[in-house]
Length: 358
Image (tube, rainbow, N blue to C red; front, side):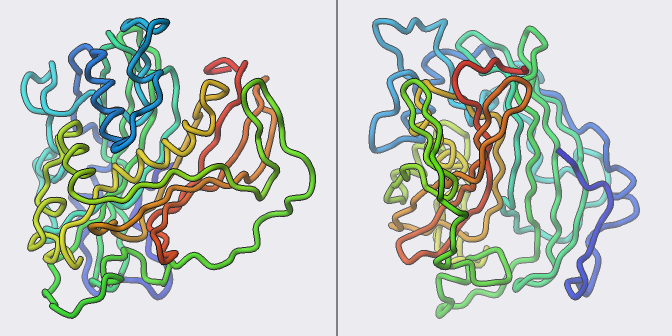
């Protein structure tokens, strides 16, 4: 994955004032922290799976059975072993809400913070008993202008390894910071969108669906242009509170309507991390035991408000062979009842019988 190390501005989108100081730019590439998890337990894995699949039960492979011992239990790819407490440095996990504070430099005057997007390459799965080490560094800064005024996009690069020094994942996430917006009692729900354009999904002409898909044991892969089964949930505090409990994400904007309005929404709204989990769910539910997720990416375009029905979708974009593996590329997105797209992304999966790292 490529990470910008210099601020870039597209023509016509240059903000009126710069958030990026020379001191901030000089710190790009520096390590921010190192975290070591406690050993992952089977209960940690089960609770996470219950939260991201609520109100339905998660797939049985995430909570065990007669033929699945605790030591064999693999965690969902989006599982976070660093929530609540970590072994090193002992105590609550270090916060990167303000990476400049970690680096000992002045922070920009942009107190509102939202998740912008993320991308990840996966290695070996996390299993019960694993101890995960994370090293995070400052990837870069970008400035853009939006409806809320100047926005600062900050990218963090996070590399996870297990106790055997095997790569678990290489992860990049971007968050947006901007000044608080004036509250409006008449602001439409669309004001919560992060992009500058209407992202209502059009009746896009999918890629040519001519030709057959691929069949592997236990899985039929549809042809290019066809969709895999969707993952659908009606969302609200019951979903968000369960996810907050497993991910240590009791943040005001997800719990309190007043805090949500200060961030430019019509009230409290759901976590970007939960939408990210739902995009993994749509892939996992389709693949079952017949494949694995190799990589995924996502950019958030809008906010998931209370009582919306959120759907996660995947569409086959292509097939390819690489390193002895059969790979399937997919386009991903989430939307709500009226067709408003909240997130867009991509994923690559490897079909069964292909080894990790081949």
